[in-house]
Amino acid sequence: MKPGDGCPECEKGKVYLQKDPALSIRVVGQVPLQATVYELERLRCNLCGVLFEAEAPEGVGEKKYDESAAAMIGLLKYGSGFPFYRLAGLEENLGIPLPPATQWGIVKEMAEVIRPAFEELIRQAAQGEVLYNDDTAMKILALARASPHSVEVDEETSDPRLRTGQFTSGIVSTRQGQQIALFFTGRRHAGENLAQVLARRTAGLTAPIQMCDALSRNLPKLPRKLEIIVGYCLAHSRRRFVNVVPSFPEECRYVLETLGEVYGYDAQGQEQGLSPEERLRFHQAHSEPVMERLRAWLRAQFEEKRVEPNSGLGTAITYLLKHWTRLTLFLRQAGAPLDNNICERALKKAIRPRNYVHQPITRRCARENGDSRMVSGVTRRRSVHNHGVSRKARRRSLGLNFRRPAAGMVILSIARFFIARAASTYMWVVAVLSWPSQSAITVISTPD
Image (cartoon, rainbow, N blue to C red; front, side, top):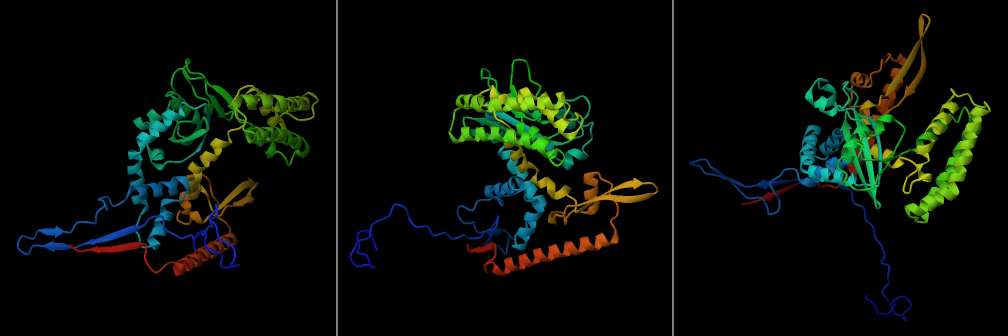
């Protein structure tokens, strides 16, 4: 049937082509990495013993691991938090040997190839209008085992006192609607890494806006000729009130609803597509009166002695009043954001693999009461990702003093372990039975 033909249904009208086509979707499962084995015919001279091998098909190449394989391993590991050992187990079940050490070698080799692109991203991020930065704890075994007096550690440490902590710093740079996310892992703090990025900033540009929390280690030490406009994250201040809601429900409700009103105005500005200058005037007209009422209310809590300064609510109020100028930068500076949430969301990608090693199955906290020891609390966090990590390694990595659990708890933990393992085994059986008849490895014979 084609446009202009008669309608087979009513046998009177004609059919015409529609603007929107009909959609038919078919989803097909594929393995992350596929392998093809080429069987090349070989001939051997019976006199001199020289071997002659057939040439591989055109376009196959000489590399065993294609660039796309390295990209997929890197995306799974660092983009989705998929551990090397888990990918190795998946590929082994599909008939493709890919040990974790091999994956690391592939990714490390490819990282050196794309380093020029990373350096260019750093240069472009330095030209950003707004730079968000934050850091979180991270562990690198090679760096942790290195001697603190080695040259490599000294180069990474700007503080005269040797630093033992390891951190992953996230820096998100925005410019004209484009975003660049950078991650640095080592002994430097977020402020030190940001200072190195800003060192590549082109001279003559206007001062950029830095958004971070109030920790001093997030502020870079810059030369006098380079200036920045610092704003603090309003969400960090809000979180302090969220943490004490059970103890001070009415007071915290007022603060949270007031901040929610400000965030509502900011969302309206984004929906209307306002420019930075128009957004600034919009906040000054709507959000500034709201924030001034909140500031007067906060001061009244201390002046009228309604709140104890050392209480949870008192410390939250003190934090907000102490950093009020930088927390309300969006009321004075065009383009200044309200919070640092964009950087914290980006950091989650970097710390996803961290939970596979450091999350214990059972953690027991004990305290001494006279001559007897009593268990004050039990916090259980189960994760199927810890089955390949020994209990002693988890204890050592966390630096905690674990007590031996009671016999009943051991039996309960073992039962839960085998139930979870049985469930995962059942899913694998279903997956194998439903898998197509062909293997993930394709064998191609190429005669001479």
